[in-house]
Amino acid sequence: MNQTPMPSILHKPEFSQAELVQLLNASGDEEKALFSYASEVKQQHVGNTVYLRGLIEFSNICEKNCYYCGIRRDNTSTHRYCLTNGEVLEAIRFAHENGFGSVAIQSGELSSDAFIRKIDFILKEAMRMTNREIGITLSCGEQSEEVYRRWFESGAGRYLLRIESSSEELYYKIHPKDETHSFTKRLNALEALKKTGYQTGTGVMIGLPFQTAGHLASDLLFMKQFDIDMCGMGPYIEHTQTPLYKNRSELIPLQERFALSLKMVALLRILMPDINIAATTALQSIEKNGREKALCVGANVLMPNITPKQYRDDYFLYQNKPVSQQSNEDDLRFLEQQLKNIGHEIGYFKQGNSKHYRK
Ligand code: SAH
Ligand code: SF4
Image 1: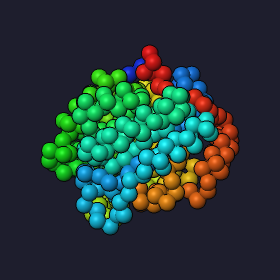
Image 2 (image 1 turned 135 degrees about the horizontal axis):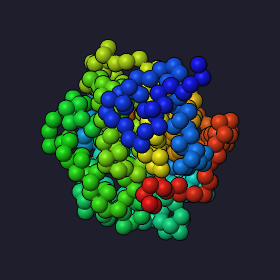
Image 3 (image 1 turned 60 degrees about the vertical axis):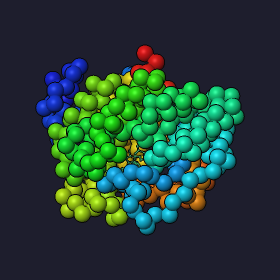
Image 4 (image 1 turned 90 degrees about the horizontal axis):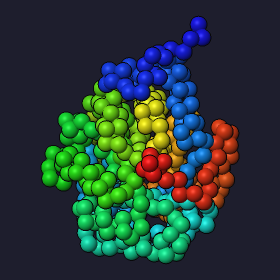
């Protein structure tokens, strides 16, 4: 009775596509065995330290029109903003002084010179201000190799660009099929990031309309094959002002998207034991302690939001995105306690670089 289910699959060094599908469909005891094995792998390779990246939602102005995203170009009911240099640097100072170790600057995608220069200026200032102590992740979409190099040289060490789906067919069901939303361009951008020397991160949305367990299994194999250093993935959550909203009746229930997301995190940890995996905000929007659950099954990075409060409602990618009413300091103390409750501790004043990258 106490036999661990599916031991022969779980303990194999590699999984086939079919085995991954089987594990993604696991429930009950099988699911428990998957989670407990992933947690063991995590303990062994990255331990129970959680690294923080203070999330700065830089701007919700975007040139793109992704079918799922609330800040897409054609959503005219969004109030658009861009933080000032001073506001971004103040957030970075807060993160640095409070031991976050790293920040992540995320933004709608823009290709203008002004945008490129502004990011560049902030990177240089942040390096100067913190004596190069702060780690910076950028998540500012597809840019030319030259821009990626410029930002890398100015101080960004990591870049997160989700592939969203590694299936070209599914990619074009959730993006317009045109020059600005080219699947090939996205793949090339990921290659360019790696070549430039960034710790390169990608990820997917989980529970998209048209998506099957087969797609998700392929996503996991894609991440392994691409040899990523970090991953941020989470449930797809619909937004009324987007084209994909019309497909809402085809979606699996939120709770199932949540459970599937946890299994994706667990499987990726088993497949890639030493990478950094974020417990994403979208998980928290379905379950209050969703991020903590992800940490227990394999994630090791958290991204507390440190965007100035008055802008947070406008960075509205999906419905029910959680917005804290507390101060950043109170949020941090609360988080620390939550993590203690699950036997984890914050890696204060550490950049928490991907072990995989260092190798
Ligand atoms: N513009 C950049 C970064 C900001 S968007 C980019 O697209 O790369 C950051 C991430 O938010 C996207 O990669 C996408 O995976 C996620 N996102 C957007 N809309 C979402 C939704 N409706 N549900 C869940 N995640 C969403
Ligand atoms: Fe813009 Fe990123 Fe949203 Fe696409 S996902 S519309 S690129 S912010």
